[in-house]
Amino acid sequence: MATVVLQPSSEISSGNFGNNAGSGFDVTKINDSSNSTYVYNTSTNQTFNVHLDDTSGLSGATFNNFVVTAVFQKHGARGVDGSFSVSVGDASNTTTFGGVSDAVFVTTNATPTTISSSPIAFGGSVGSSDVDDMRLLVETTDLTQVRFFQLYVTVDYTAAAGYGNTVNGVASANIGKVNGVATASISKVNGI
Image (cartoon, rainbow, N blue to C red; front, side, top):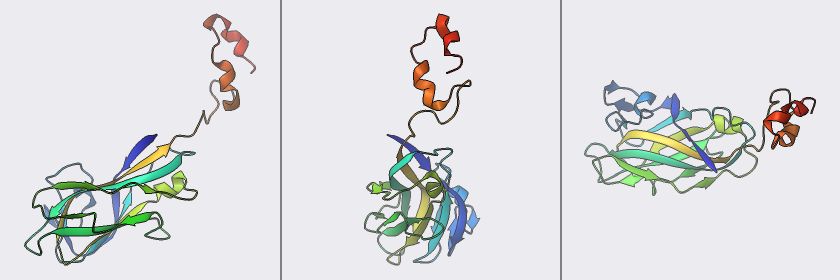
C-alpha cells in the first residue's frame, strides 16, 4: 500500500490566532516542514479550519485510512499543558471522516513535540474527489494555548490496478497481451 501526505493548503476560517511573524492565522506557517515557524491561539479555546492539498491524480484508488500528525507545544503560561482536538471532514460535514480527541493531542512540553493519531479507517465508498475535499477543524481545549508548527494527514491508499489509458494505440484491456513480446516480433503487436 502507498501513502500520500496532505498538508494544509488554505485557511477556511480561524478564531484568535497569531504567528511567529505577527498577528493573524497564516497557513504557510504550518505547512512548511519547519519547527521555527508557527501559529498559536492568542486566547484559549479557539478553532481554525483548513483545506488540505489535493491527492494529485489518484483517481480510481481505494482509500484505506489516514493518520493525523501534529508538531506542537504548549504556548504561554496558561495551564500546564497544551491540548486540542481535530475533526476531519469535507464541505458537507466537519466530521465526515472522523476525529481525534484532545486525549491524543496533549503535551506538557515547551519544545516541539510530534504526535500522530492511530489510523482512522475511511469507511464506505470514498473516492479521490472526497479526499481532495478533506478539511481539518482544529479546536484548542481545556483553556490552553498551543503553538502549531506542522499539521498534516497521511493517507494510506491502494492504487488503481492496471493502466487507465491507451498506450501507443493499445487499449488498456489488452496491455497484458503485449507483455513477453520479443523486440524482433513487436510488429505482431500492431492491431491488438
